[in-house]
Image (cartoon, rainbow, N blue to C red; front, top):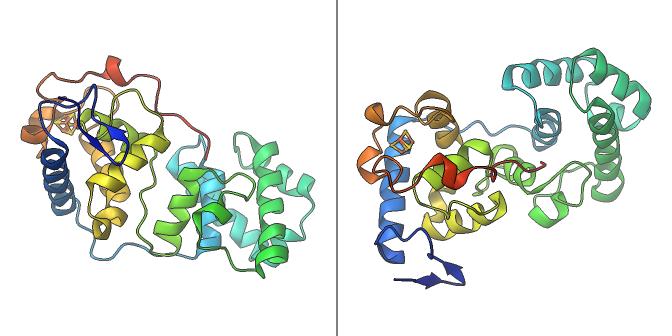
Length: 244
Ligand code: SF4
């Protein structure tokens, strides 16, 4: 049966459940994830530093991103200094730190900082559409800034959230991450959005790994279509990568 909720179709991933049943299952999944990966208080950082972290992180490993991000703020301190830095100098700094796409990212970092200073008075906007106008900031980064920089309810869909949502049948297997976000925000109660990214990232690193997920050890297995063979990695292949 094909059911719709505000234009989102269940076609192709009903798993014999109605939209209401899927919502109930989604809530159970998120509650279990929060219980399994508790975080007393989510780290709500500085929006500007979160934004710069997100630009550096694109197609980079977490450990390298964190090291470069720390070095960058040791050397350049604040938004005024970064906005006044010649783009070539920033590019050279990133290149020496071993950052991929250093040319593009160097330009994004300096230009985004200049725009925030000039257009927004030095304060990062807390609006997704304004954030997405900044160089290097796609939907995922904008949501990361909202969730982790401002502490607002948002669901950044990164590679872990994309893969796990599809394995769990919370989004159709062949849609882009932007569409995954649309399904998640309609299936999950708003007060829990902010936990979804961090819990799925932890889950994706420890159990629901990209290759050979450890379904036997997974607390979600009873709720998971992948564990029952109803969705496979071949079904979802090729839909997890997007800029920013
Ligand atoms: S049961 Fe397997 S596929 Fe489903 S969430 Fe757990 S580890 Fe991932």
